[in-house]
Length: 64
Image (spheres, rainbow, N blue to C red):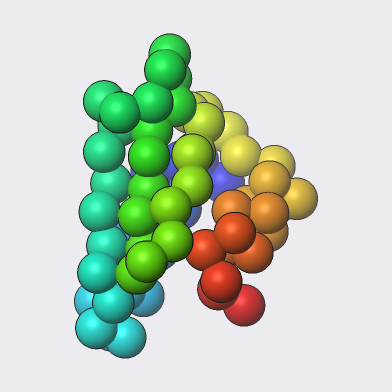
């Protein structure tokens, strides 16, 4: 899964659930960006994301 696809999926889910969502690609270092979902934040790297990494990100955000 590409990072953009993950961002799109999470943005859609946040809109559906009425949760605050913010993506700031300029906040991280290098190709990383900061993603805020509700009251939780995490760093997301750029490029192709391994399914295990996607599960880790969702776990950090309290999703699934």
